[in-house]
Image (tube, rainbow, N blue to C red):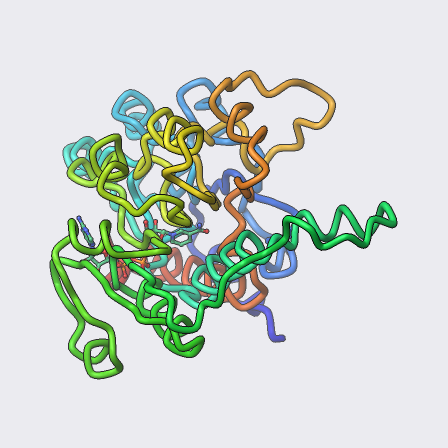
Length: 340
Ligand code: NAD
């Protein structure tokens, strides 16, 4: 696969601006050409406590768990910050009102590979339903019993999709390929999906009729805890719930109760409400002090991945390209097509 050429970075040099990347990981390195560049690459998360690393930068590039609140933005604006280039689609971690008031522009990567995230949601679904996580551990211990590993056919199963934007759409199409009956809720139904066989209903009906529910909507104030005590009560007993979108969509304490009662039969999470400071970090030598996360990990029917749904070569390549193009356009005073 081609990686972005160093000429983008030469352009960074041509117009001197200090650029700092945060939450930058080893897996991103092949997609950026370091060369002779004025960029600084920090693996640290950016938040008010780590603000000194960003002082003097006119451009910063951030990821999902960098906390760009009003307090931090004010300090960084005073030290010259002009552009935030998010290397992700979501922007719920940025105080947009404060950024506007401080004249800080924001760009994001609206679509880098909806397939990466949709396919990961399907991987979690198949693993949980067919109990691959248990089978893997059993076989490695020479336990070849298949007792307790019964799943169900996705063919003819009713799959509810909440949010049918880019990722939801890709997920729906994969489910249609399995021969599942796909029903969906989105305030803006997609006519192409309808032609392909997806049926739209009110949220309550999607919640109550689905054997599997997958969330593919943004986290905004009105969608925070959309999965809560009341919405869980409407679901079928034993529902398989998947969240690859944003942790805040699910009320963790309510879902733990629903797991204990059997209302939720299986739960797949790639995102977690309190993931900041936990996900993306190796905590194997210390302790995770989050009681809800620790409780979730005790259930055999809960599968958690650490916000890796986007992590494919294709997605990383597209993220790097879009980020570099946005920064270059900003430096050259051109229109920012991915502005938030
Ligand atoms: P998108 O903007 O293309 O689609 C979102 C859809 O949600 C839109 O169709 C919108 O109409 C719909 N929507 C808005 N409010 C809704 C509501 N109350 N109920 C139902 N639908 C509603 O976004 P996308 O690119 O498909 O991303 C979907 C989610 O995936 C976002 O939360 C994003 O942050 C998350 N995401 C996660 C990862 C990961 O690695 N886990 C990677 C990328 C994106």
